[in-house]
Amino acid sequence: MLEKMAEFFENRLNGYDEHMMTGIEAADEFYPFTASLLPTAKGSRVLDLGCGTGLELEKYFPLCPSARVTGIDLSEAMLNALKKKFTDKDITLIVGSYFDVPLGENVFDAAVSVESLHHFTKDEKIPLYKKLHTALRANGYLILTDYFAATDDEEQTHRNNLNALKAEQGIRDDEFYHYDTPLTVQHETEALLEAGFASVQVLKSWGTTYTIKAVK
Image 1: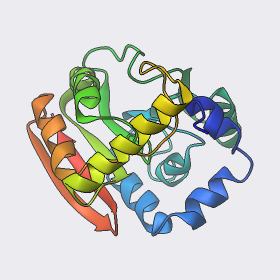
Image 2: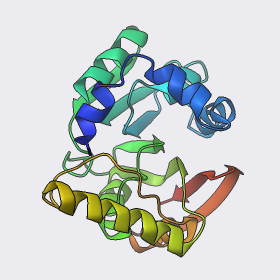
Image 3: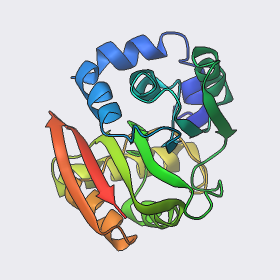
């Protein structure tokens, strides 16, 4: 049975960090790599989309202890776990969907998202990326580390499977339920460019996981 997105992660909070670090190929490499790409100037402002328990922040704060981070996540339980890790840091946490939360204009030096955005279609992502583009300062950028479908056929198969499950279970299209539907890197790139980003570059990959940098 499909589970609502927030409930899925709250039900798995115990052991979540261990699962992410040991159950995903090369997680011990891509979390530090992702953090190393974020700004380190004093007081840098960073937006974390789908921050969860803050695994990427564990690697980032040693590089920039004075960073001012805004984290958005659907799961309040996840955010509470994150808060306990970083009691001495400048963090603003928002419970909600990053599709709905206002991000402002020219606010952030960079944004980051790790293993969160592989649940949405290209068409769903473009408005989010437009909003993010507006929220970034001049020369700001997004670091996206996520896993991707290898082919168009694989991408469509994931989407077809989700639609079939939702139909079987009587789930409305406007509800977020947990099921992985990764895009191809090409379609992700197209979404970012259509949203207004000036350049999109693949920086590194580990199997099906890629790190992408999109610059305003």
